[in-house]
Image (cartoon, rainbow, N blue to C red; front, side, top):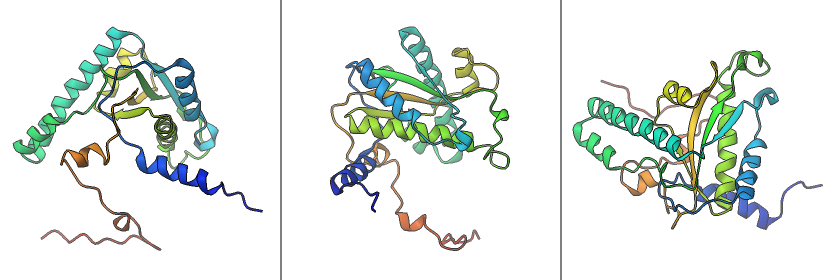
Length: 224
Protein backbone atom coordinates (compact mmCIF):
# COMPACT_ATOMS: atom_id res chain seq x y z
CA UNK A 1 0.00 0.00 0.00
CA UNK A 2 1.32 3.42 -0.93
CA UNK A 3 0.68 6.43 1.24
CA UNK A 4 2.13 8.83 -1.33
CA UNK A 5 -0.01 11.68 -2.62
CA UNK A 6 -1.02 11.93 -6.24
CA UNK A 7 1.54 13.34 -8.64
CA UNK A 8 -0.48 16.57 -8.89
CA UNK A 9 -0.62 16.95 -5.11
CA UNK A 10 3.09 16.27 -4.77
CA UNK A 11 3.88 18.81 -7.47
CA UNK A 12 1.77 21.44 -5.67
CA UNK A 13 3.62 20.83 -2.40
CA UNK A 14 7.06 21.13 -3.98
CA UNK A 15 5.90 24.20 -5.91
CA UNK A 16 4.73 26.11 -2.85
CA UNK A 17 8.00 25.27 -1.07
CA UNK A 18 10.05 26.53 -4.03
CA UNK A 19 7.97 29.69 -4.56
CA UNK A 20 7.69 30.81 -0.94
CA UNK A 21 9.28 34.22 -0.52
CA UNK A 22 10.12 36.53 2.37
CA UNK A 23 8.00 39.47 1.22
CA UNK A 24 8.54 43.15 1.98
CA UNK A 25 6.16 44.85 -0.46
CA UNK A 26 2.42 44.62 0.22
CA UNK A 27 -0.94 45.96 -0.82
CA UNK A 28 -3.19 47.33 1.95
CA UNK A 29 -6.05 45.01 0.94
CA UNK A 30 -7.54 43.38 4.08
CA UNK A 31 -7.39 39.63 4.57
CA UNK A 32 -10.79 38.05 5.21
CA UNK A 33 -11.15 36.85 8.84
CA UNK A 34 -12.00 33.31 7.71
CA UNK A 35 -8.81 33.12 5.61
CA UNK A 36 -6.67 34.47 8.46
CA UNK A 37 -8.16 31.83 10.75
CA UNK A 38 -7.35 29.19 8.15
CA UNK A 39 -3.72 30.30 8.02
CA UNK A 40 -3.43 30.28 11.80
CA UNK A 41 -4.95 26.82 11.91
CA UNK A 42 -2.19 25.71 9.54
CA UNK A 43 0.31 27.05 12.07
CA UNK A 44 -1.43 25.15 14.82
CA UNK A 45 -0.97 21.90 12.88
CA UNK A 46 2.81 22.26 13.21
CA UNK A 47 4.84 19.61 15.02
CA UNK A 48 6.22 20.48 18.44
CA UNK A 49 8.61 18.70 20.76
CA UNK A 50 6.70 16.75 23.41
CA UNK A 51 3.51 18.24 21.91
CA UNK A 52 4.18 21.32 24.05
CA UNK A 53 2.77 23.70 21.38
CA UNK A 54 4.82 26.66 22.61
CA UNK A 55 3.56 29.09 19.96
CA UNK A 56 1.35 32.03 20.82
CA UNK A 57 0.22 34.51 18.16
CA UNK A 58 -0.72 38.11 18.91
CA UNK A 59 -2.78 39.81 16.22
CA UNK A 60 -2.08 43.54 16.01
CA UNK A 61 -5.32 45.29 15.07
CA UNK A 62 -4.64 48.64 16.79
CA UNK A 63 -3.17 51.15 14.31
CA UNK A 64 -1.24 53.07 16.96
CA UNK A 65 0.29 49.86 18.30
CA UNK A 66 1.34 48.92 14.78
CA UNK A 67 3.11 52.27 14.44
CA UNK A 68 4.90 51.77 17.76
CA UNK A 69 6.07 48.32 16.67
CA UNK A 70 7.32 49.87 13.44
CA UNK A 71 9.27 52.45 15.45
CA UNK A 72 10.97 49.65 17.44
CA UNK A 73 11.93 47.90 14.21
CA UNK A 74 13.23 51.11 12.64
CA UNK A 75 15.38 51.76 15.70
CA UNK A 76 16.90 48.28 15.49
CA UNK A 77 17.41 48.71 11.74
CA UNK A 78 19.69 51.67 12.48
CA UNK A 79 21.58 49.72 15.15
CA UNK A 80 22.02 46.83 12.73
CA UNK A 81 23.32 49.16 10.05
CA UNK A 82 25.84 50.58 12.51
CA UNK A 83 26.99 47.07 13.46
CA UNK A 84 27.38 46.14 9.78
CA UNK A 85 29.45 49.28 9.24
CA UNK A 86 31.74 48.40 12.14
CA UNK A 87 32.05 44.72 11.17
CA UNK A 88 32.39 45.23 7.42
CA UNK A 89 32.56 48.76 6.01
CA UNK A 90 30.54 51.93 5.57
CA UNK A 91 29.66 51.05 1.97
CA UNK A 92 28.02 47.84 3.13
CA UNK A 93 26.22 49.83 5.82
CA UNK A 94 24.82 52.17 3.17
CA UNK A 95 23.71 49.19 1.07
CA UNK A 96 21.82 47.80 4.04
CA UNK A 97 20.06 51.10 4.71
CA UNK A 98 18.77 51.09 1.13
CA UNK A 99 17.13 47.69 1.58
CA UNK A 100 13.44 47.49 2.42
CA UNK A 101 13.54 45.24 5.46
CA UNK A 102 9.88 45.20 6.53
CA UNK A 103 6.33 46.00 5.45
CA UNK A 104 4.77 46.62 8.86
CA UNK A 105 2.83 49.74 7.89
CA UNK A 106 1.76 48.34 4.51
CA UNK A 107 0.55 44.77 5.08
CA UNK A 108 -3.06 43.73 5.56
CA UNK A 109 -2.43 41.79 8.77
CA UNK A 110 0.30 41.99 11.38
CA UNK A 111 1.04 39.14 13.80
CA UNK A 112 3.67 38.66 16.47
CA UNK A 113 4.72 35.04 16.93
CA UNK A 114 5.93 34.33 20.45
CA UNK A 115 7.18 31.64 22.78
CA UNK A 116 4.87 31.00 25.73
CA UNK A 117 5.95 31.33 29.35
CA UNK A 118 6.53 28.45 31.79
CA UNK A 119 8.41 26.48 29.13
CA UNK A 120 10.69 25.02 31.79
CA UNK A 121 7.82 22.73 32.77
CA UNK A 122 8.18 20.90 29.46
CA UNK A 123 11.10 18.47 29.77
CA UNK A 124 10.18 15.88 27.12
CA UNK A 125 12.61 16.49 24.22
CA UNK A 126 14.12 19.59 25.83
CA UNK A 127 16.32 18.28 28.63
CA UNK A 128 19.48 18.52 26.54
CA UNK A 129 18.09 20.74 23.77
CA UNK A 130 15.96 23.43 25.42
CA UNK A 131 16.00 25.43 22.18
CA UNK A 132 13.63 22.88 20.66
CA UNK A 133 10.79 25.12 21.83
CA UNK A 134 12.08 27.76 19.40
CA UNK A 135 12.38 25.13 16.69
CA UNK A 136 8.73 24.22 17.28
CA UNK A 137 7.60 27.84 16.90
CA UNK A 138 9.66 28.07 13.72
CA UNK A 139 7.77 25.09 12.32
CA UNK A 140 4.48 26.88 13.05
CA UNK A 141 5.73 30.01 11.30
CA UNK A 142 6.80 27.98 8.28
CA UNK A 143 3.34 26.40 8.12
CA UNK A 144 1.74 29.86 7.96
CA UNK A 145 4.22 30.86 5.27
CA UNK A 146 3.51 27.91 3.01
CA UNK A 147 -0.26 28.08 3.51
CA UNK A 148 -0.21 31.83 2.81
CA UNK A 149 1.74 31.32 -0.42
CA UNK A 150 -0.73 28.66 -1.52
CA UNK A 151 -3.53 31.17 -0.91
CA UNK A 152 -1.74 33.91 -2.87
CA UNK A 153 -0.86 35.82 0.29
CA UNK A 154 2.64 37.17 0.90
CA UNK A 155 4.40 36.92 4.24
CA UNK A 156 7.49 38.60 5.61
CA UNK A 157 9.36 37.49 8.74
CA UNK A 158 10.81 40.51 10.58
CA UNK A 159 13.42 39.87 13.27
CA UNK A 160 14.83 43.39 13.61
CA UNK A 161 13.62 44.29 17.10
CA UNK A 162 14.68 44.30 20.73
CA UNK A 163 12.75 41.32 22.19
CA UNK A 164 12.56 42.85 25.66
CA UNK A 165 11.20 46.14 24.32
CA UNK A 166 8.60 44.38 22.16
CA UNK A 167 7.58 42.09 25.01
CA UNK A 168 7.06 45.12 27.25
CA UNK A 169 5.06 46.90 24.55
CA UNK A 170 2.77 43.89 24.22
CA UNK A 171 2.42 43.29 27.97
CA UNK A 172 3.91 39.81 27.77
CA UNK A 173 4.52 37.88 31.00
CA UNK A 174 7.98 37.05 32.34
CA UNK A 175 9.38 34.04 30.55
CA UNK A 176 7.47 34.63 27.31
CA UNK A 177 9.44 35.91 24.35
CA UNK A 178 8.60 37.41 20.94
CA UNK A 179 10.23 35.48 18.10
CA UNK A 180 8.99 37.11 14.91
CA UNK A 181 6.90 39.95 13.56
CA UNK A 182 4.90 38.50 10.67
CA UNK A 183 3.63 40.77 7.89
CA UNK A 184 0.82 39.16 5.91
CA UNK A 185 -0.88 40.64 2.88
CA UNK A 186 -1.74 40.61 -0.78
CA UNK A 187 1.03 41.62 -3.17
CA UNK A 188 1.41 42.95 -6.71
CA UNK A 189 3.80 40.12 -7.48
CA UNK A 190 5.98 37.57 -5.72
CA UNK A 191 9.73 37.94 -6.06
CA UNK A 192 11.18 35.59 -8.68
CA UNK A 193 14.16 34.99 -6.40
CA UNK A 194 14.70 35.87 -2.73
CA UNK A 195 14.60 39.65 -2.42
CA UNK A 196 18.14 39.83 -1.00
CA UNK A 197 19.37 38.04 -4.11
CA UNK A 198 17.36 40.32 -6.41
CA UNK A 199 18.74 43.36 -4.62
CA UNK A 200 22.32 42.11 -4.92
CA UNK A 201 22.83 41.85 -1.15
CA UNK A 202 23.89 38.21 -1.20
CA UNK A 203 23.74 34.99 -3.21
CA UNK A 204 22.27 31.60 -2.45
CA UNK A 205 24.55 28.65 -1.76
CA UNK A 206 23.83 25.28 -3.37
CA UNK A 207 22.60 22.27 -1.38
CA UNK A 208 25.87 20.50 -2.15
CA UNK A 209 27.67 22.87 0.21
CA UNK A 210 25.25 22.02 3.03
CA UNK A 211 25.21 18.24 2.72
CA UNK A 212 27.66 15.96 4.52
CA UNK A 213 27.82 12.21 5.08
CA UNK A 214 28.89 10.17 8.11
CA UNK A 215 30.48 13.14 9.84
CA UNK A 216 31.41 16.78 9.56
CA UNK A 217 33.31 17.80 6.46
CA UNK A 218 34.43 21.23 5.48
CA UNK A 219 35.84 22.79 2.35
CA UNK A 220 36.73 26.04 4.06
CA UNK A 221 40.34 27.05 3.72
CA UNK A 222 42.22 27.47 7.04
CA UNK A 223 42.96 31.02 8.11
CA UNK A 224 46.61 32.06 7.65
